Image (cartoon, rainbow, N blue to C red; front, side):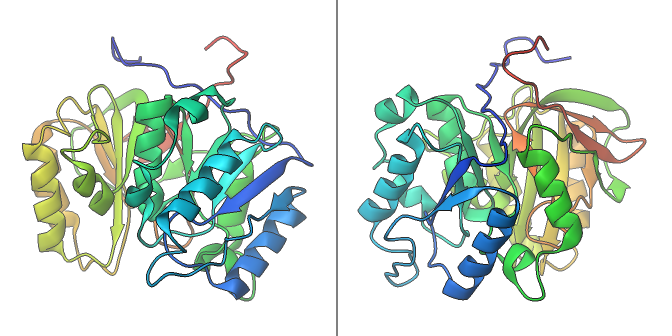
Length: 312
């Protein structure tokens, strides 16, 4: 049952064949070859893929100037003919856009899908905070899992279709271990990449775990750094009131499970680990700010995406 007082996010319509989607690059520069292959994957799903003129811009470690990246994102979001805004890749730079976006104008647009992961966690948090929108944390078209040869990782693509399209229902995402309290809890899922969540602590876009299930994942971080970021979130109060935790992939992070258990298990809530969400392969999608269910017996997270025109 949803915790009392937990706000309900607005839900976008899921996709249909023929829908127009726009690829944007809010963070790092995009590899043209991967972009072409990822675009082809989306086109083969029956989508009309549009690309802004500055998608392949590069400015050091960014995909062009902040103002250009912000304008591409805002234009795509405010276009009534677009059903989804899909981030081409992560990297770094999304946090730099948060103060450049016209949130009033974006709030007047109809809800649509925002898809991305990793550095895009900053946008997920901002869209939740400023727009009250449910967004999709999942694989991006110019990432290795979707765009490297010989083609998209099959399980990843199958799950992406089930999360994106309205005529499909995604199955549970199953992990490998339970390291917290036993049981079953339900509530809105929040979170994303641990590094970004720690970086947003103390800002207007900081995560609040109150009454929510928290997703955490990361890449290329040593266990002591994971410890430091978890400690920061704990001390900042960002994890207060969490109903449970879902731990995704920790690629090239050594063995972070002991520190994750040490810092999270004392909170006395269910914690499931080893879910294919984040930077690994396969890479599943998770809807944020809408309901999910943790079950430690099956070590699974089940999304409960609700259609806005149907009773819950």
